[in-house]
Length: 88
Image (spheres, rainbow, N blue to C red):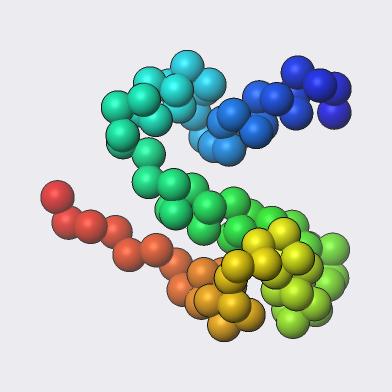
């Protein structure tokens, strides 16, 4: 990954879903919920680790290294309980 791709990923953690311009617009208007984005990234990383045949506990421990402020059980709940959709 070159420097431009790394910068894009850091500025837009949802680059696989929306473009950088749309992310910046939504973020600037307060329409991006940062915790939901964090949880989404945790779920995607967990799935990638599990796809590599890493045990569940080891995958959660690996994520705890990246997010040391989260408890083991908190990460377990994030990866095993899908987000609830609000009825609009």
